[in-house]
Length: 520
Image (tube, rainbow, N blue to C red; front, side, top):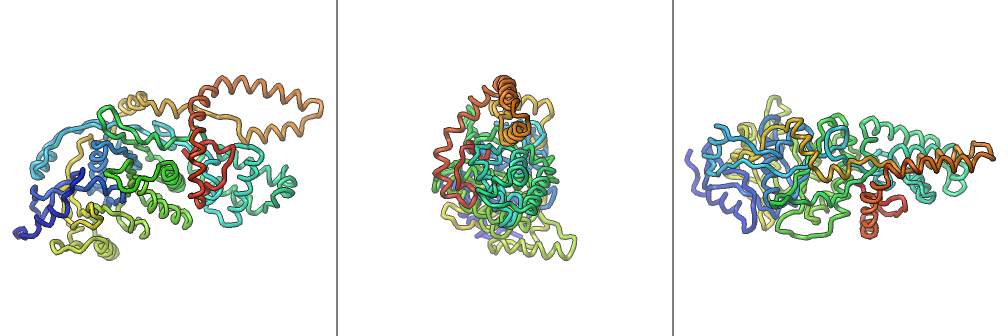
């Protein structure tokens, strides 16, 4: 079938832009790749979020690479959630092969190998910069939502935070929170009941069980110090390329609670820390969330509502979010409705339910006179996709069958030696991977209980001896770290407190002397 006369002009007009763009590929009609109809995404619209969807092996990860490379090349910082462990190759240039040459000859687009500045990060035992947050920085409301507590149990959590604030007991990790909760329901219950009200044993037991549940998903590795400053995500290298921050999550596929917890507090912290920007020529930061269904898999309704609200608001901060998953139905409808860019790779119809799902998916895209979308989705080849985006006027661009460009970086993982070299040269990793274990609620309450149980004549002498011995050890180990890392974060507190009034629903409404840093 010949190409309709109106097809190429429609694509050229729908994907033209006055500003900077990212080239995804070229239009396809009836198996013909039309190099005169390039598919380009306006950089200014990528804070309106997006979706990359498709069955396993259809090219989603390579499309993610192409988008990330285009952003980095134009000075936009990128953060990628690497669930499958196959994105580290962005740090090395790719190698040309016959398939790449053939594809780019059809596209009429020159292919050049390129490497991009990368930072490897981790929430757990993976190599890289360690991302952490303290319990105090979450606040009682957000911490309760993470645990999936009801109103009564959330009230107990608020009481615990209030007690810790009033007694200057820093809640840094889960061990601190459990210790304060246990103290308030045992040795200190009379004191707490007199000043704050009684705590139900049933509620306390439920909260402890919920904490144990998230601990089993390695959340104890996430809660603690030093907290990561999200402003460190906004970096460029000497050549002007934006840094790619690759969060390695291959060991968290079976721990969706920890993943969703991390994503919620990351988005909320970015919203809190970044200033309002309005309409920008290009975003400051774009987050790519691979295997996005893991965020929503174990999230409570309260958590989903919070995510939906933040996703709506965060684009005004110059931040875009690109979800990558197998099917659009993996994304809750209220979130899906916020996504301006949609890149749909092939879906496979093996059952009647599959065919129904594909028909539903096809209805999410703009009507087009050029394609039968429901059938085309099942016929797309590897490295092909249906694309629609927002124009600079904010209207949807025409749906177009696209032959996608190949990534310029390596389409494979780094070797262990390459990873070690990358981490060894990271200034951020050297700063944040220092172990800081300052005195917090657990040690303070342990000392209080020890002091109250010791003979009266020994209390002060024992305490002074212990303080002196521990002071020497702690001062030598963490003194420098506190001065250089924690200290610099304290100055951010004043600005953050102003923002907390706007984000009360996130548990940021109350200030505390023990909450000295942001969530990261």
